[in-house]
Length: 247
Image 1 (cartoon, helix red, strand yellow):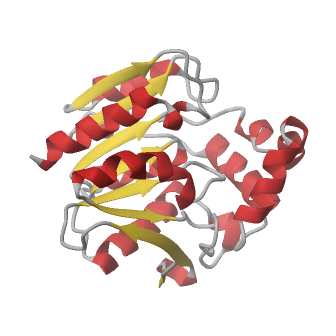
Image 2: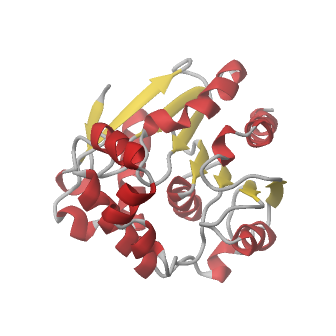
């Protein structure tokens, strides 16, 4: 997989598929995941003939953190790194699909004018008071020893335990998005959320779709946070949204 130098000394690994001259679509993964986790969307978007670009967000997978390490981890810093990738690959203002943490970074890109359209899947717009406990490494090990082993295999650049603790701190202390800024979000927006999501309150997704001038909301029944990306309703909604923006 290719690597680029990210701002302040980090690196960003990314995967790419589809015609180089086609309309670019940027896929941004969730916290503690990698570009590989976006495979369910690759499967449905590839037939549209788009150029798919999937980075490992800073500190995740094989993407190295910039100077300052985990203490400097921030939503803005992640968006900075992705912006560097956009510029380096000449993507202009790509269509962006973000899942959970990736959706938060996607919203930041949209507010910066670096997205032509935005699909946000199960993403917060406000801080998560319980994030420290949710992302505590020991809690993760207790909930799923198998997942803990998988995380150790996925995250090569940064030990997953350190990354998880830093993400918990980030999401608990991040101030969230300003409502007035969201009300001026200058791109078409699709928000998709499951009705059984225990990590992102349903009202946050509904608020985002309501505030954004070009916002629409899709509720996926009987879907929690982890499985939303794998539900057919989600994948069809994203495919239809991207397909309309290609016309």
